[in-house]
Every structure is written in C-alpha cells, then in structure tokens.
Image (cartoon, rainbow, N blue to C red; front, side, top):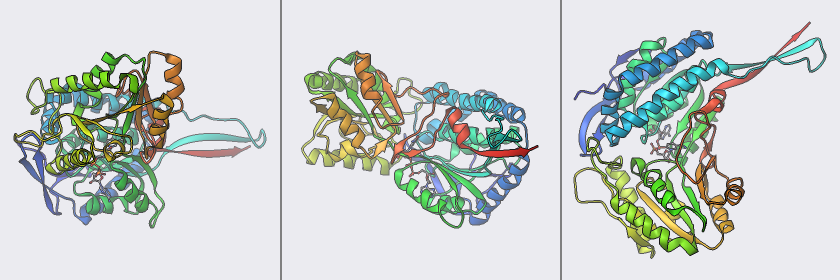
Length: 476
Ligand code: NAD
C-alpha cells in the first residue's frame, strides 16, 4: 500500500523539507512510511496561505460554508474504506470499528457544523443606552487557527477541530501527531476538493520544533490543542509570547466511575467492556478507575475480571478484535511501568498485567485493585488498564473524584435517580454519565475542567468558541 506523505499547503501537496520521521504500524511494529517534516519556511508558508485564504473565506455566507462542509461529509463517506485502511493501520485500531464508527462520526461532525453555522445565535438587540443607540451582536471568525492533534483518534480529533473552525469562517493550519500523520494527509485531498486553497493546511513534524514554531507564529490568532496536560502548559506559554493568542485546550483525563450499592452490575460490566477498553483504553474519557461501594466490591471485581478475560484483542483486520495494540513501544513501556510500580507497592493485579508474547505493541487488558492514593489510581495511564477501589460512602467517592487534578469525564451508577443526580450534579467534570459511560452526542459539548483544560469540542458551544462576539452600535 502506498501512503500520502506530502504536506498540504495552499491547496496543493508538496514534499516536506524538514527532517523525516517514521510512521509505524503498531500491530506489527513495521514501518509504513517515512514522512518529511515541514521546515520553518513551509510552516511560515502554510500560515501565510491560511491568512490570505481567511480574507476571502471569512466573508463568505454561512450558506456557502455549510454547503462545502456537507459535501466534505458526503465525500468522507464515499472514501470511508480507504480512509479506514490508513487510520486502522497507522493507529492500530480494528478496521471495522474505524469504518463503521469513527469515520461515520467524522462525517457527522462535518455535517453537524455545516448545519449549525446557519443557525448560529447572534442577535440584533435593543437600544441599551437610549432608543437612538441600536446595539447589534455579531459572531465573527477569529483568523488563523493553529490546531494541534493527538494520536488516539487522528481523524476524529482533526474533524473536531477543523469543522467548527472552518464553519465559523476561520482558516486552519493543523499538525497531526508525529505518530499518526497518514490519515489526515489523505483527508487533506478531500478537504482541498471542496474548500478554497489555503483554508485548511496540513503540516507534519514533532511537537517541540514544528508544533512550537507553528503556535508561536505572529499571524496565528488562536491555538487549539488536544493533548497532554504538559503540552497544554507549553501552549499557554506560547500564547502569551509576542502576541496574545486565544487558546482552546482539550487535555488529559482520569474518569472516575462511582458505583453505588444499588447499581445494575451486569449493565455496568457490559458497558465498561467498551467504555474502558475501546481503543485499548487510549481515550481521554476511558472509564479507567472504578470506585465501588465496599458491600458489592467483591462481586463487581469478579464480574469485571471475567469480562476482561473474555475480551478479544488483535490486528486491525482480525474480525472479532475489540481493540488493538497501543500506539508505540514507548507507550507500552509507560503502561507497563505504571502496573509494575503498582505491583511493587502492594496492589493486587486481578487480571492481565503484562505485555503478551507476540509481535506488535499489545498490552493485556488489566484490572488492578489499589488504594485511592496509589499512583495508578491518580495518574493518567492511557492504556487498557482499569483500577478498582472500594469506598464506604458515596460521599467519600465524590470527594475522591473531585480531588483529582483532572475534570473531563465521569459516571455514576445507581438505580435511584435522586441519589445518582445528587452525586452527578456535584461532580467537577465536563461530562457525567448516569448509568452509562462514553456515549457521545455531536449536539452536546465535550470539554474539561481543572487540568483537563477548557473550551468545548462538538455542539453549538464549539462553534461559538471559534468566533469572537462583537458589539456594533448604531446611533440614529
Ligand atoms: P501530546 O500532548 O504528547 O501530543 C499532542 C500533540 O501535541 C501532538 O501533535 C504533538 O506533536 C504536539 N505537541 C507536543 N508538544 C508540543 C509543543 N511544545 N508545542 C506544540 N505542539 C506540541 O499528547 P498525545 O500523547 O498525542 O495524546 C494523548 C493525550 O491527549 C492524553 O493526555 C489524552 O488524555 C489527551 N486527549 C484529550 C482529549 C480531550 O478531549 N480532552 C481527547 C484525546 C486525547
């Protein structure tokens, strides 16, 4: 298979002039392609192309932008197989899930923002100072957006960034993760077919050099990152350099799952099959730490261990695989380090707990019984690892959850709606599910609190995040 490895700048592909880096297949560890990074001149060229494109794109009507996004959504569906081939190979995901699930969501995101922009709320208001002063509220685009994407859902995270920004009339320079550049480089040809040149540019390279040069460019007005908390700090520093830039940060997570003594345990365990292990747990909302009422802790632990024992993992084209390898050998080392340190500190490894003896970067689905202050319960592991910790009262679990540095996703499990809502309403997390976990709606905002960042992906809220509210006053 041949891969598109060229950068996409000002509506055309061109070879990167910077250092080249390898894109691997996590399922085998084999090289898929070498990709050449953008050099400083190409980063500047991409930002200038976006800046020039912005002058025209920002003046188009919502209807014109909507049509472009709707056509992109259709084309993504038409090319879903080839996009899925690249995404599954480079990110190590089951092909059938990428094609039927993730790519359907990518198309849906373009369709949603293509529709939302025609309904964006910006109202003409009354005279507030006197009846001779009429105030108008406009929602205008911001300018050039530098978008930095992670490797866990390369196309979906790119769609979450590109679609609202472009719908609102901005122009984008996006950098995929150096681990997974290939699918976005392919998607660029579809974007380029329906958008004027320069509206979306894709450049590749590592974070500290290429990413940093992009986000500090003087013509960049906003930086949108999905990534690690540490990278979020680098973005905030860059945003406060020579110019003041807006920031939009979707960072890490460590989702608590609070299980009360009256929870439906079978539904919980079946839900966590996907909510904890989809994408090998490399998901910022993964249900990765279960806080369970002590009276049912043994039962829940046993059922989780049985479910974990029945999980099937394997290569992208293995038809029954529920998840694949983790992204790199380094990521597997990191996961293994967490589990080994937990073991040494006295935690019980209830299931899994090692890398299987096979090619590729696989790690066994793992369940660890550990106390609340254990590193593995507090820090983001980002792998197929779930911890379980018993509590004596739900208030204790609520306190544990809210004491976390993270505030992205959480869930509460109880058959008593009042009890569940009483906990859900006080959780300091951007999303709380009740009696489910990991279910997304494009119409609803996704975003974090605390060190998980701020700003919303998805929903009308995200579209508004990529606009500036402007007041125009007319005196008569
Ligand atoms: P990462 O922060 O290492 O990398 C993300 C991107 O940032 C990459 O493109 C990388 O090249 C770039 N980058 C790194 N340093 C940079 C710098 N100094 N300047 C500019 N760009 C820089 O994260 P990752 O390992 O790719 O992704 C995993 C992380 O992303 C996890 O913490 C996960 O929780 C988080 N995540 C969050 C969400 C969310 O919605 N909140 C969604 C997916 C992933």
